[in-house]
Every structure is written in structure tokens, then in C-alpha cells.
Image 1: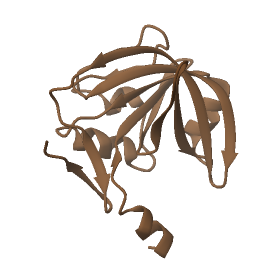
Image 2: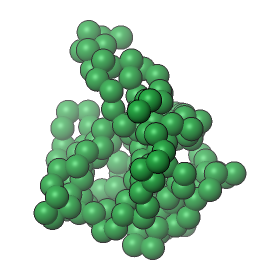
Image 3: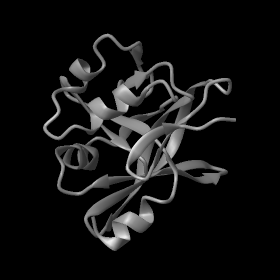
Length: 160
């Protein structure tokens, strides 16, 4: 692990699953770089590895969903983070989910929140690509659940 990677691992980050529907297939990945950019208009930013197939799809499919995971969903995060993962439909098998009405992307239920977004700006940034997106809808918010975070290379629940 590089010194830079180790330094960044000291920063706790919320864990989300970003999904997109590409024709007949569904893709998704776990991210810990999702943030609010603006309240008016509501904008978010997500960072995705530039070499992955999901990045290729997001470059041609503007609409996607983000499910912000809860503390009990570490297994879901791990499934979507596994290299060479299969279709997102297989990854959510046995996990409550639905299709977002604005994006048709898979939305994982049981998280702390979920939103649907439409990319408005794409910014290449080193080995990642940043997607700035307008929030089309907030599918749900569950403030009674605790969020899942990534800290020091592990998924963790935070107590409140």
C-alpha cells in the first residue's frame, strides 16, 4: 500500500452502490467517493475508475442510481466491489431491490437512502472519471438506519 493510499484510508467515507441499466443488462459497482455538490440545483458527484466497463457504460448512459448502504449491508458492498463481478441482477438476487422509475437502474432497498441522477458533466481525473449529475429523485431516506462506512480498508458501522 502506498503512503498516499494509506493516508486516504484514514478518512471515513460513506459506501454506496452505483448502478446503471445498459440495454438488457445491469451493471454496478461499490463506491466510497460520492458526494453532494449543490443544493440548488441538487447535484452529486461520483468517482469511478476509468479503466472499468462501468465507466464505458456511464459515458453513454446518462441516467444512473446510487443506493447509500446501511450498516447491515456490508455483504452487498463486497459483492459489488468484487473484480470480474457478474451482472448486477445476479448481485442483488435475494436482496430487496426495485428499478428506479426515472433511470430503470437497480435500486438496493434497506439502505439509508437512494437517489436517481442524470449526468451533466464528465471530468477525467487521473485514473478515475468524475460524474457530476443532477438528482432526478430521492427514492427513499431511512434516517433511523446507521450508514455503512469504509475506514482503513474495511467496511464499518458507525454508532450514533
